[in-house]
Image 1 (cartoon, one colour):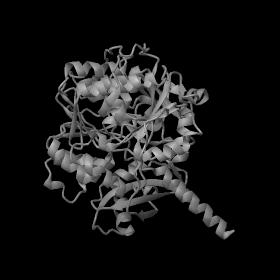
Image 2 (cartoon, helix red, strand yellow):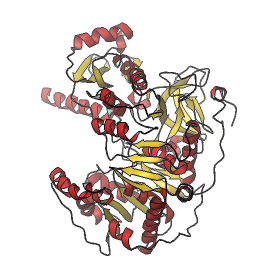
Image 3 (cartoon, one colour):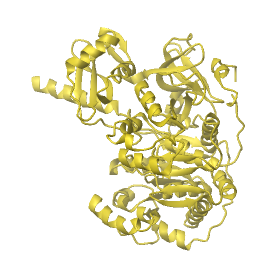
Image 4 (cartoon, helix red, strand yellow):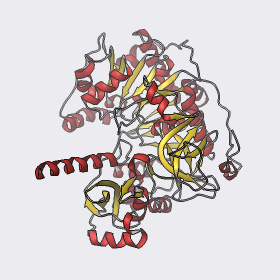
Length: 566
């Protein structure tokens, strides 16, 4: 790789290039089980599991999958929240030579059927409460075997006895699944299977470990093909960036869902490779998270801006000790500077913005955590072995420093392509570069900045307006908890700027007050023309605000108004 300006910014502790052990991902679980056999691998709702126990459980699952017919390359869908079974299922599948298809537990039948059919998954691991949904689509897919587990199986006493009552109250159902030829109980598998080491050969460079489906905000979701090498490379880069982490000693807070590659890499894979303890949380609840940090003392906390915002705005925030936190990398959306400052002040740890996408396993950039300069508002520097460029939208050639273009990536973490979509794979690559769809620029030191998604740029009255710039300004207003800015239809300007606002509890703000505030810091054409106050904003499972959902909502309203006038 040619010397790039960002390499001169690296501290001595971070190498610009890394060596990768050419072993499949599951080999690192075995290694940690040998090196840290009695170290706690997973803490879940008070119950703990050592690395030795985790490895043996994954090996049993692997053995069982092979016994019921899994062959190398078969896809195994895992539809679980963060829990011990999600880690067992992931590594057990890889040990058997399978490919994991991470499936969002919130998917409804239509979304689930689409993903199962597109991936051709023959096996599935899911929760009992999701079983009715899975079984209702099973006949229209290639599914042959459904392995069912329940949260209570991995809860400590007496939570395991109480949970079925909570489940019935919360979900209104109790699901009974019989262990049979096509339906299998994970609890029975763990009791009866004699584990055997698999002899499946894995090609580190080319064999897939994961089909990670993209969100599908435009068109149908696509399966991103990630190899063992892609995922290990990104995990090793993460390890190098967080160089103060001590093997076998750190505690990682696992709120980011593993069915999203960001949570999988920065929590699950990093922990297993390094022998760290994972605290698994099946969903984000601000109060429960604060209590968990206070009691369990995590040192690393990968998250998303909405998670940090949720904690900072909890009324009892100051009752809890968050000082155990050393480092947090924020991803999935822009990190407001105000949130970064507040969180660092409260915890005494470091919170930096990073950047990536499913197609890059996912991380490509981050700010330096413990070293200077950290540049606020920047996504930071490309990671070791990662090349990045800003390409002209017109010519596809690199643009001068400081000029806006499309961010493009090369590196060992870049996907093999989209599953069964050669044309779309070809379209996203240009001269070996992966095109991200994000607009940004690079400064003379090699720091990168995202100005916005190519498809989210607002074109109003001939001006290009970047929502992120407006969001950064409005986040400075102390009564705002969350917000998103979008371009909505306008008969005069084509599009106009609209801000969707969630206020802090008890706050009262008018449109006029926000307008006066915005005009102090933004050119008149960038100031929102419309403000809408909401109780909450639509989000993905990792807390990314769904701007496109709001835009679609506006277009629908616009279309309905046109029909009324007609």
